[in-house]
Every structure is written in structure tokens, then in C-alpha cells.
Length: 80
Image 1 (tube, rainbow, N blue to C red):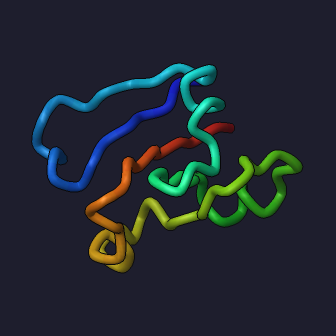
Image 2 (cartoon, rainbow, N blue to C red; image 1 turned 90 degrees about the vertical axis):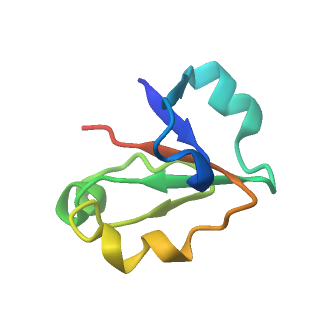
């Protein structure tokens, strides 16, 4: 699994990647926001959901992009 880490202020900068082990060490930290980008049907059928994650609709970024905190690291992930 590969996950992407960015802060809202660096959207146009190079996107960093972190390993599953690095994410595991940060999981549920107060300064981390973990976003699940799977579509609703795939997410709903999945038995696996990452602890402390929040599902957002990747096809409707405009509805949630402005709600992202600017003081946290944000990890986006999508798995099949």
C-alpha cells in the first residue's frame, strides 16, 4: 500500500509519500487527518476500514476541500 501525505498549503508542491509503517506510527495522532478516497459502494462493501479515517467522495472534492484543517498533516489513501 502506498499513501500520500500533504498539507493544504503545499498542494502545488511535490507530493510526499509515506510507507505503511510510517503511517502506522502516526495513526490517530491529533495532528493527522486520514482521508479514505474509495467510492461509496466500494467503501461500504469493504470489511477493512482504517482506524481514525474519514471517508470523502473523490468525485466531489469541492464539497469537502474547504473543510480540511490547515494545521494538520493530511494523508489520502485509496485501496481496492
